[in-house]
Length: 100
Image (tube, rainbow, N blue to C red):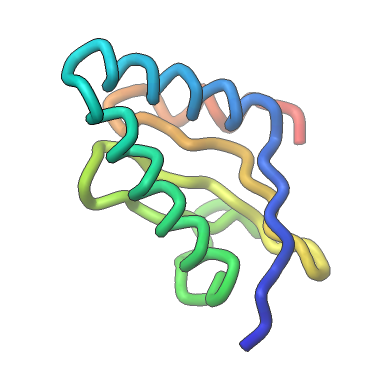
């Protein structure tokens, strides 16, 4: 099984940190649970990126079932580039405006 390299863009990294902190402020260890679920999702993406649908151009999307978030990513050669870990309650146009 091929495992792709994972590259998390700075905007996505900031979203992860902010989300972790928000969940921790709501309930102790809930931020940790979010990170655990996210790690599982990243593993699924790194091992089988083609299992997730293309949504815009070459961007693919994984819906996180346990939390209201999606991961927006692209496969580029031997790497997975994560552009967003996006709250589905926000306008999707917000992440589309980012520079890649």
